[in-house]
Image 1 (cartoon, rainbow, N blue to C red):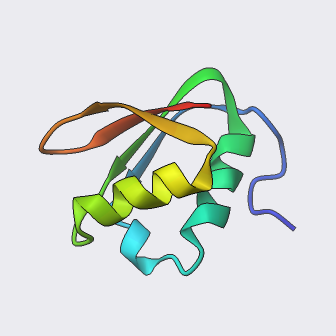
Image 2: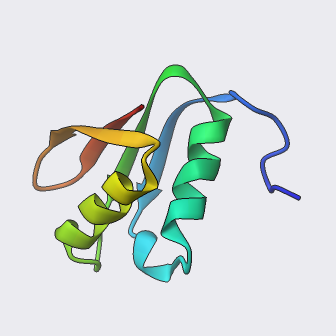
Length: 79
């Protein structure tokens, strides 16, 4: 089962310095997409993982697109 029981419950998700600790980043990104409302945002901070790896994981998952990027974080919207 999912740790998030309901679909479309979140308006905004912050994922701070955690991608490097997740074995299946694509599955995590799909699960985060499942729980977000239409028009929501995901704001991951790459932390200790190279930014390019975070961008690649987001692209490869196919459920988010990077809308904005700066030194601190990415802002992603659902595809």
